[in-house]
Length: 193
Image (cartoon, rainbow, N blue to C red; front, side):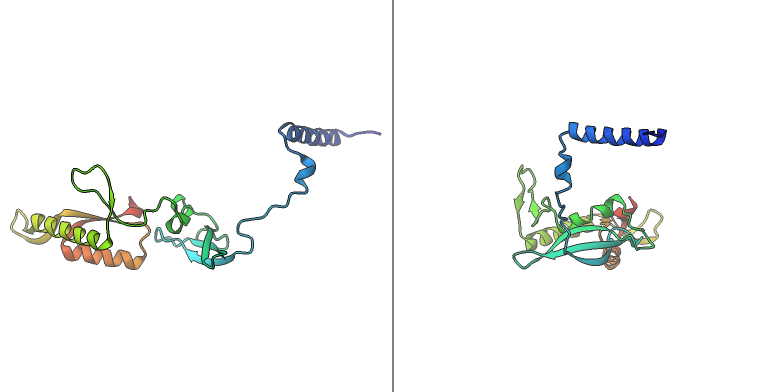
């Protein structure tokens, strides 16, 4: 039997692969019998848009009803059929699952009093009241009606606002209008930083 050079190289590569796989502890006979079950198998696919910036990358969200009856978000990935992102996502978009499902997410407001070493859980009512009082005090202390040249400016220079990249367009519009209404001039958006 005559073996060509190409057949010899193919046989050598296949043998090396089999020996390498066996040497690493893989049972190649068992590998054929194992059936892989995907976590998203049987899940409902919903189309969505990434919330982080104005590009509008398309997402696929996989959900499934859990045994307790609640709908569980399993996975979010880029939509390969989208002409905008063609299935790719930036680092922020790739982690968008963390917006909804994260073990590190703080479930309620925390407050650390001046001089205290520990954070304590507080109510939303306390948090919003404290925030409103601090904004009012800072605005009253730093509000300028006129600049050095005597021009009317009506601005607050003691407060800055940084919008979140997960803001929707409506939330960003509302936040900007609120800050402008307070006279805040230092306004930035996280997606541009």
